[in-house]
Image (tube, rainbow, N blue to C red):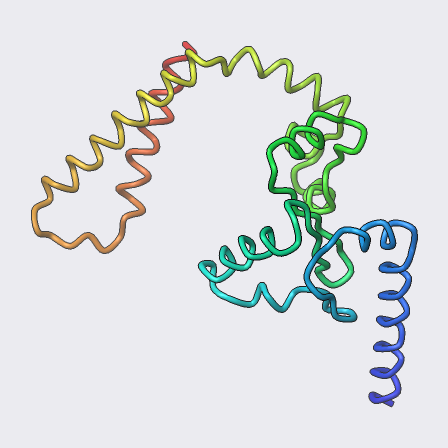
Length: 187
């Protein structure tokens, strides 16, 4: 019984794999060069390495395939763009600028705020916040953060050779001071 269920599950995965990778969108994505793809798992095997090796993988992939290359993570295609001109073309066009599936998974938790909302709602809320965070205010934020960072470093230096085992209370204190300092900017 278990083996029949397992065989059926594997068969369904192979059929779904064929459907996704050979459907209309899959055929278009497969025209983009990329590393070899295995059935069901896709290209997930190079990403089971350390971060340093992952960076090396991406630099080699950009050199090998081109500035645009694709990988498949199970059934999800991912297209990597590394040239700034190509990024500008993609990011300046709002036609295909939709939130990914991760944002849709977060929507029940975060509702439709600035982080998870789609284009019309996002654009109006972003315009409201854009005036709040102009360059002068952000530079004042940086001054507050630098001041509190220096205060924390001074506090650590004044502790002498004592070993601090738990940094959370110390970080909480100076982060709270930074937040309060930033709040004073708005008052």
